[in-house]
Length: 149
Image (cartoon, rainbow, N blue to C red):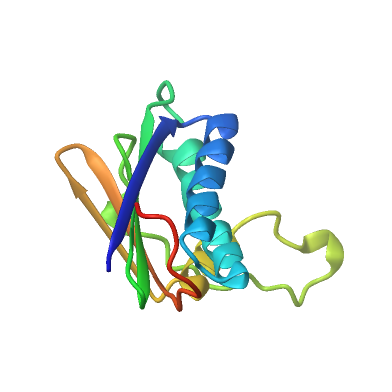
């Protein structure tokens, strides 16, 4: 049985944190194993932070909408926003940062897309009708049937 739910919030740091937490809390009540829920939270936090920091960087914060579709085998999470598109309409490659450098030369960022691509089994992006649509797929083994969506 497929369970779906959605939430929306304003693209601010505080609202993003609250929105991601509410999605992950809901996933936990639906039976996603704790370790997998933690991984989804990491990827979702990275993706939503990109929206807050980059998509709306030049404008007032707009809305972010997260939709989740959970089946016994996989979870699809779609993140939609009306912010700026990704450069050249493409997602960053997500190459691992070079950490074989002196500590003072370690990068401060650039790990997000690597983490997203490592944790999700599929990553899809499209820009349509002025909106960014990022979809992340996670392989899931639901532990117990729970509350209906």
